[in-house]
Length: 89
Image (spheres, rainbow, N blue to C red):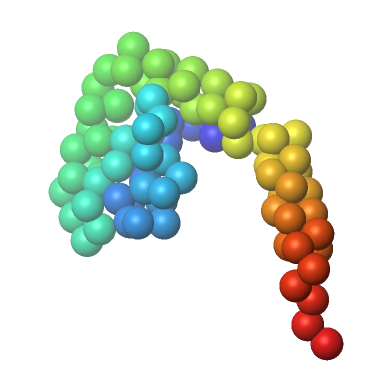
């Protein structure tokens, strides 16, 4: 995303848990190379669509998927685990 590339991902549960509700990423069913090819062809034929997809990827990288945001979430998670008193011996 931070490289400004159009985001196309396989619609697996792992990817969808991250991408669900986001504006911009294109997904295709696992094991369906024709659907992937259709996304690539569509973007390849439309400079406007490609430019918009690239803009959205950069925006996602700046606003949500960056170390400043992720580090806060990680620290919060670690603090919740450590602070819960559930330590193993």
